[in-house]
Image (cartoon, rainbow over all chains, first blue to last red; front, side):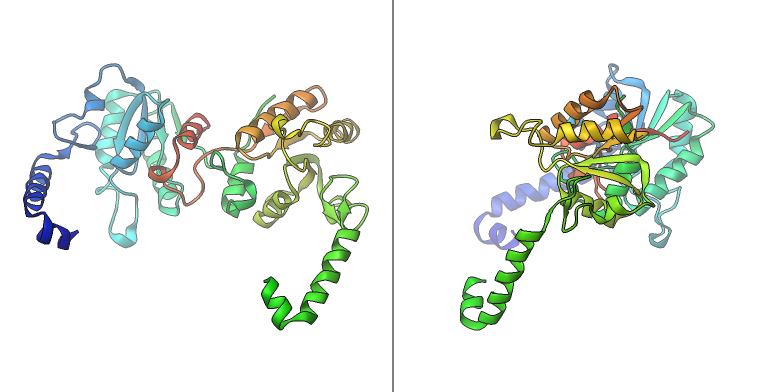
Length: 172
Length: 172
């Protein structure tokens, strides 16, 4: 890309530099949910039609994009920008957990959905957040772990099979 | 492989041919759970220490291997050898559903776990089996669909995200 810009498209390079600089200067965090936005409050937080009773806690703004593209969820979000990882120096302060606690106390959502990733750190983070807010919220839930849609048991790892069996849902 | 056997390892080829022929001749279906076995009843069906209260319905013998390797399940199995697929001429007879119904009536398991794959045909098969045996069993359950362990929301397809949110489990 560097060679292409310098040899064949210097104008494009200049434009890219300006766009990047303005993005870095103008895109900040939503004061409400901490996702990336150019305004004080993001498009989703400013939308009065979203369900205030549901609050979904995710690791990154990209997770919000994925959930919104999937459709079916119409509640609010909160972005941690990472996961607890003491070895990398990421603790509760870096994840804005004080802000999350304040938000939960103020808005009183009926349910908080912990949608951190099903990795070791993601699970630990979900557990920590659950413990932090358990006295403030009626219901705290965790997204389902299991076999992905279109997947085949035969090609799925053992940990996922164990979770898929443990998390089985009653049909009748 | 064909060139290697014919040019460099004719003895190995002969041995492979004999092994394959004896496997084809001797490996049949377990009369109890329909998995592949050299004996009338397979090792798992003959094991008196397995939990008779749980019956797990899978699409193929490879699924049994995957679940056994994952560990954590100690019940019985039943293999469909496929899934309902009218377009390929696979109906209830081909899947041994009459045998499954007879087995459920005779053994009276407390719970039947439908572990067909989360594909369109797998879901339809689970629904059909559930409807077939619903008057014979106290509890019928479906394995969890969701984000696989170690997966990241950002890279998971929309259908799986929708299922992971719908199938969320209450923590408190």
